[in-house]
Length: 65
Image (cartoon, rainbow, N blue to C red; front, side):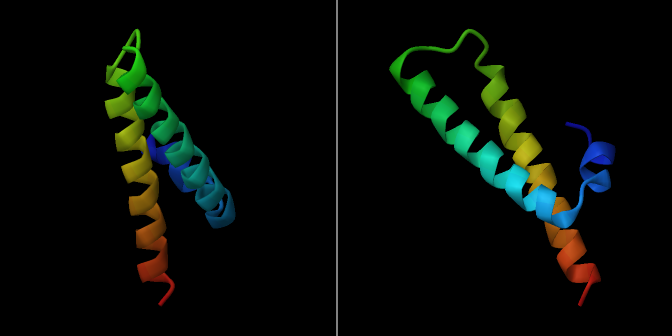
């Protein structure tokens, strides 16, 4: 997900999406520890997407104060 797409989302949608992506990430890591994924680079990509979303949430929090 690109940063432009993240910025277009509302804050409530972004919070829900972060929770969903974190759950997906945890499940992916667990599955990878049991049996290797076809593309383990997906884990890295998902981790970075989560970081982008959390960064945008933090920026919104600081701008609203």
